[in-house]
Every structure is written in C-alpha cells, then in structure tokens.
Image (tube, rainbow, N blue to C red; front, side, top):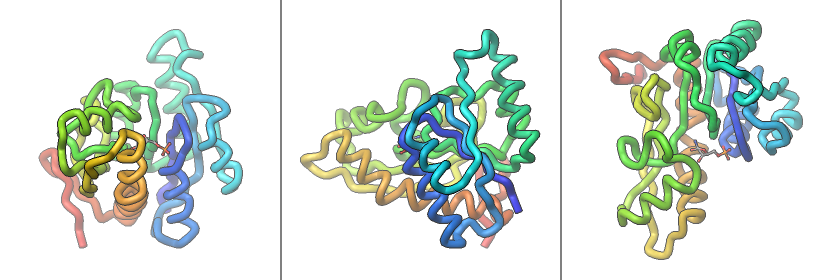
Length: 208
Ligand code: GRF
C-alpha cells in the first residue's frame, strides 16, 4: 500500500475526487493518509476532517528560510512514510530539496493542456483567462510529475475539454474540473500506486 499525502491550498475539489475514488475502491494500492494545507481555514481541511483523514497546516511564511520550510515539510512526509505526494491546487512552490527527495513521487494537476498556459504565474483563473484571450477551441487538464521547472515535469495524462463560445474563465474552469481533472487525477494516482507508471528519458509510459 502506498501512503499518499495530498497538498492543498483551497477548496479541495480534487482532494474530494481522490477521497471519493478511494472510497469506491478506485485507488487500488493507494491510501490517503495525510492532507497538508498551506493555509488554515480552507475548505479542503474540512473535507479531510469529514473523511477522517489526518491533516496539518504548514505555512511557508512561518519559516525565515527555504531550508527551514523544506526540512519541516520533509520531516512530516518522512515521519508518515509518505510514498506519493499529490499537489491538488497547492499554491506554494515546493523547495528544490523536496522535489529532489521525492523525485518521480510528486504528482501535480494543472488545468490546461501543457505546454500551453503553464509555468510561473499560471494558476487559478489566470490559466483560463489566458486560454480565452488566445481563442483556443480546446483546453483541458494535465497530470504530471513535478520537477524543478514549474509545470515542466514528465506528463502522465491529459484530457481535452471543448471551449464554448460564451465561456467565462469561471465556466471554463468548472467544465475542465468536471470533465477532466476529477477523472484523470484519481486515475493517475491509482496507476502510480499500482506500479503502472514508468519514467524514462523524461517521458512516462503506462504499463497495461
Ligand atoms: C485546480 O484547477 C487544479 O487544476 C489547480 O488548482 C485548482 C484546485 O482546485 N492546480 P481544488 O482546490 O482542487 O478545488
């Protein structure tokens, strides 16, 4: 069984999709054993409480150095024997030391088809504003491993979603969550935990 930590900063709908998948037996060899938030009082923490999952709040601003933050975070993950870290709307950039210690064991969900509309500054509604400003007809979501380059790690899964003529950033954001994110994130987590993902030369291969 792979112990999973889900890192959050907000509403936690992707966390909920993972909780629901686990309850339905769709995470195979995975178990969510920790929810870690970068902010107190967010609804994702309430979702964890309702599901009976232990949670912690760790705020970057409570540490004067990146090293201090990195060792606190790594300490928590190691103490709980975490084998997979899932960034589900986590808005703090992970320190290099954490990326290195958990290489190919950290998964992120991004609400666009990478390499479009990604990288530093592309988060929340900004991603969808940029997609609408460009006039793309398809957007979607990407699950990828986390490397030191923001949104630059090996791609695990993608799903395209149509952009509608009257879309607003909020409408597009919601459609991408419903039609793509909540489906491909639990599937990717399940594939990881079942040992089906192979990373070679910066690419992910899925064993059947
Ligand atoms: C999602 O759109 C995800 O793709 C992005 O942040 C958002 C988090 O939403 N990384 P939620 O907290 O899971 O509802």
